[in-house]
Image (tube, rainbow, N blue to C red; front, side, top):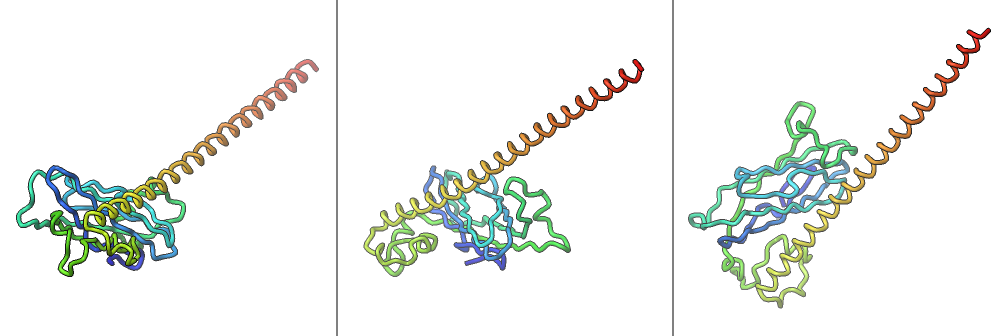
Length: 228
């Protein structure tokens, strides 16, 4: 497990099962190990090849977040299936009031008063055949799936195809959960903005009413004074 004092990252490398003309997926689990709100940002040396969601967000204290990295469909295999692409995950403490869509642009710029942790991740390409069976004769199951399964023995009788299918279901479940969290936060932000807008309109109407009332009193007072 990689990472620093603020967050931990699992797995420590991105493994993609590459098939030509098909996109490949890999999940990263980000765990906040602190009592602070932590913002993170994901960078890659090949941004045109990968789609990262979310690539920037905020993880609440002791909470976790799943990042889904998509490798775009490839037209040919790299030489010897070797990949030189790298990923960099930056993390830093942020105020509790910051939402994931309100992270300032300078959040991940280093300065004397800010501590930014960095975790480098390498990319590994494998073919479908290479993940079916490992050297010990067990089903080819990634560390991310082992973590989700909790090391239970109930999966040892599954075939390699069933394990891979189960892995994809678990990854999709985690991704959907993360998307639901993001949507919930967006709804909460919209509700707060609507509430603030409603308050502003009410306050403006109240101020307008006071202005009219004061104007009426002044007009009445001036007219009474001129009559006298």
